[in-house]
Length: 243
Image 1 (tube, helix red, strand yellow):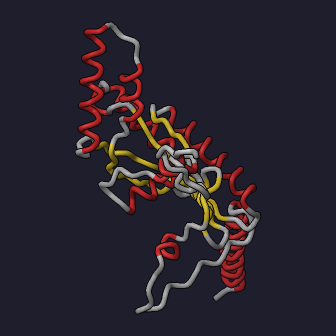
Image 2 (tube, one colour):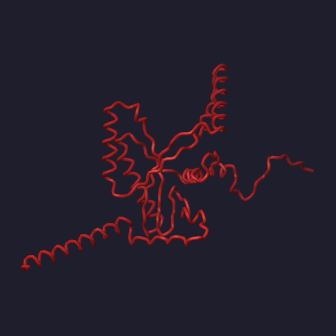
Image 3 (cartoon, one colour):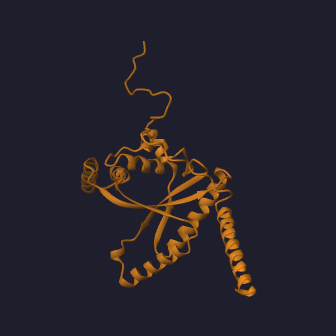
């Protein structure tokens, strides 16, 4: 083996090591610092708490706070019915969506679930609308139909979500800013494909988590909180006689 060949092999090894170190440096820089260590798996036979299984410590300003410096946001995705578009529009949408995904520099998790349609806003609008007597009667019948359908859990729609992650040791505010930037980048990229991306609020995140644990039940934690479930004192609606 000639000296030139040995020199080339050494240079190749140094180049490979340098490339690996550079990729590690870029990965740490994008994640906001030293990558946090992940928890160990629970021991076999030991009961697992739901909080430990999901690892959700808090939900603040729409951000899920997980242990070990991990943060997540959930975005609702909505778009026009693909099959109602023309063939040209379908092709353009597919190309735009593919281009949007190709330019991403961070992982995105896709979650699709069937949820009961919230008809309360529509029912309230029908009940309070100022209409002629004939139309008012039809509106009341429509509102009653929507309420009955909601009670029978007949109004179900499939909803898609995107989970955007960010891991850092720099704290919540830094993670929230980076997640907002990632969501804005994702929304702009998918807008060309006529896909709307909306980041969920804290109430919407909690409602989604409750739905995933209690499928088929119409109960929502946000509505319970609005009704005073978390209040320190609850006053009954019964009339109190004053002596």
